[in-house]
Image 1 (cartoon, helix red, strand yellow):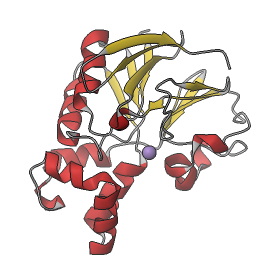
Image 2: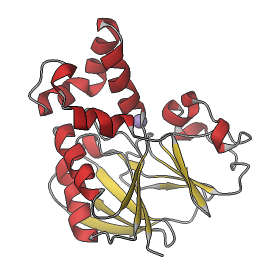
Image 3: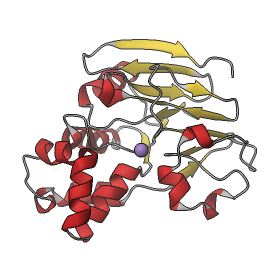
Image 4: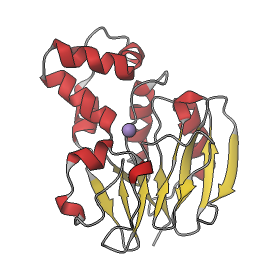
Length: 223
Ligand SMILES: [Mn+2]
């Protein structure tokens, strides 16, 4: 068995993601779970999706869906009102990265990547979601509201599976992952001058890259 890693919110921060990926050199039997929010706000959402598509050929990459992928998908299928609210939520930076003025210019392969994202991933000791879960509800019955939108601050109780939750979505402005024992949040505010975090789940060791190309390492603090 390979190692298991989780990658937190990237938000178009290609340099930060590249810095971590180059350092870690994932092997073919590693499992790498990306927690969603690849697009919006940062400068190169297109480049981030290109990199993840390339990574899929090198390792066992699992791509979760974040609320920003949800917004982008809805913007494509619904009217102008929704499109404009997505632009305000950072979608404008995504369009610029494609050199596009509307979503019809995003290539089909990238739409397929976004459509193929999954709501959660369950491992033997941990499960992975973008945002959060309802503690008493089995994973396969979770609602989109919690999976994609609910903030980490609201999560008080362990999940009924007994497994540890690994999530993103709620920026940890300290730049360090938050550890509650039964739940870990690794969104470390990449687009706001923070870091893209990659956590090795079994050891609690993590590596972080930022938009200046800097790399640093740490270990989850005790809850
Ligand atoms: Mn999010």
